[in-house]
Image 1 (cartoon, rainbow over the protein chains, first blue to last red):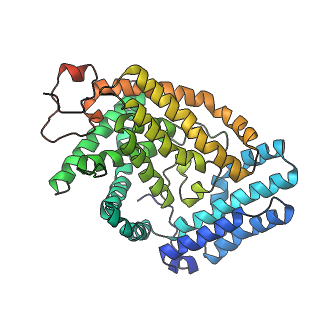
Image 2 (image 1 turned 45 degrees about the vertical axis):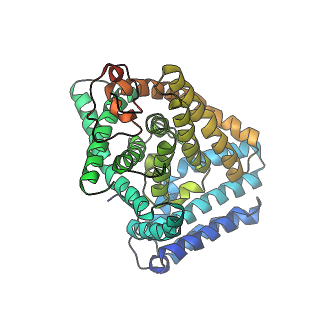
Image 3 (image 1 turned 180 degrees about the vertical axis):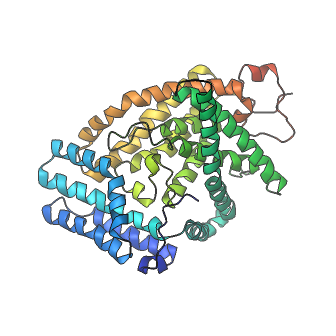
Length: 198
Length: 209
């Protein structure tokens, strides 16, 4: 199962998914109102390590998150330095990094299944307007299981082309990949119909 | 008939197109220069609108983004989680929904798929619509002036133009290779007859007699 979840027993791991999402959203919103000044840059830089410490996630996890954002950081800072003063550039980049790191805490500390349940509960009142929360939840779960299937179909197409000596080419890959994927969609649709979904 | 009702075929196609966009991000992205990584994923967004039509196409993007928000690493380079929605490229992600809707509305405007409408739809929905959502949000997040942000995003224009051309060519080819894909309301009783209409890539809205 592909997921960013990091097992643990920290405070955030034990919080219910819904209230945790709300708390993190408030924190992210508060961060986004920080002014573009030196002290704000310091606050932003301190918030993420603090959040990860509260969550009981190690320095390694935080470092991997920052490392994954290295290009975004480099370009944001570079472009900012071109257009605004160093103080604002540092504060803006630091704030962007801190909000991303903080928002990532939700998925790092919550299982996908728990989040899906929370979404279904959240959507429950929409049944009044003709929406079907269970169908929405089913659609999400089916997509989760379909991603690895398509990744496998895609590598199958690529291997077949490599075996025939075809050069790696996006256009030449996408058409056969789409055809096998859509065939899979039709089979999936038939399977769902056969199980009583209309 | 409730037009928002999804039958099994709709659910399968919407799920598969969301997964196609995710799978196109898997090779690691073709290049990661820039705040917004250049990937094949926008190609998938264009194809979702062109093949599924406006609201199913947009819905498949909503599904993909919902899963990203739930923490699946489905964006190019294995990015995922709510963090993607507060970063500089957040607006472009929301732009995918609008883009797929506009592409679908234009490409599926007539009773049959035509070459010029396919190109027009993908061009309009794939670039101006996505940029129109993406650039202001990026400017807001990074607190750069709108003009500077727009200037910065010009870096992606050549790649996006190539993707538009590619998506249009792929859509037209797909209409010949797998015409069933373009049926907006496929009924179980039509086992894809090989009619002349299908051979020419006509999108059959109503079952072909």
